[in-house]
Length: 326
Picture 1 (tube, rainbow, N blue to C red):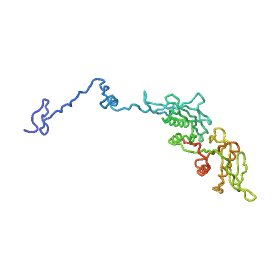
Picture 2 (picture 1 turned 90 degrees about the vertical axis):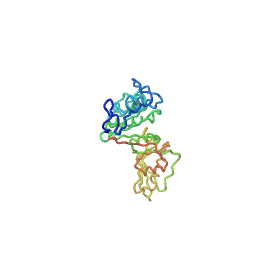
Picture 3 (picture 1 turned 60 degrees about the vertical axis):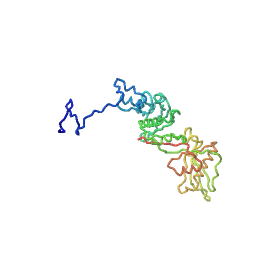
Picture 4 (picture 1 turned 30 degrees about the horizontal axis):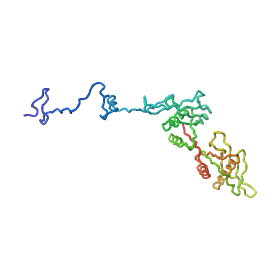
């Protein structure tokens, strides 16, 4: 018989395959027939391996997580967060703390803001604007988050929102002072692009400093100024200058009774111990004024001055950070 001919089924198809093998219909797998009634997808058994994910796949065709991150803005300030809840969103915002004068771009304008999570206050900070035009700068101070709300990104969102507020007021740079003990705040600032500009150091005095080396003398030089001179025969030679002042309340470095604002040694007289002698004189001035803490504010690029102060027992008390906003 020719392969193209043979018995056919009722619908006209060949009853055999290409090689003469009959077409056999695979039997249905034994088991319960699928339940196609409305709502059957919700009635999945706890032990069938599907659970809630199976219900979501039956409804939407793909898996959807129980919580979705919310990231949106409110009132022009950054907001983001995540937590399980009705809509799975946490909104962190920066809002004015009271009905006071709003923060403007005018020099000296300041305003306090609240950090709020879904309308609930969890912290705050203060913003200040200095200078105008290309010299416009902003200052962020008093950043605080409640202890039970920390390590949840509240300070990160608040700091980024504060930068946006200062940028909208025309500030080209933001400054902040962070205590040396605030390791978490320092790490956060570094992660957000802040860099050290000035370092505030303090030394707690426990006794009188050593006397001046032979051949050196100190002369007064104006208000709070001291001049270190060398005795050379009948004359004297100027080798360095020191200016010490009592810092006003709230000035840097915090906690210092006397602050060294100027320390200068002539280039040709450096590396001879004159800077050390001048700092000892600052300690003498502090003790004579009834104080016990000497402070100094040094630019972070002055590596030699920082090493000298560290060798005399000065410790970092605060870091002055900055970040460009342009």
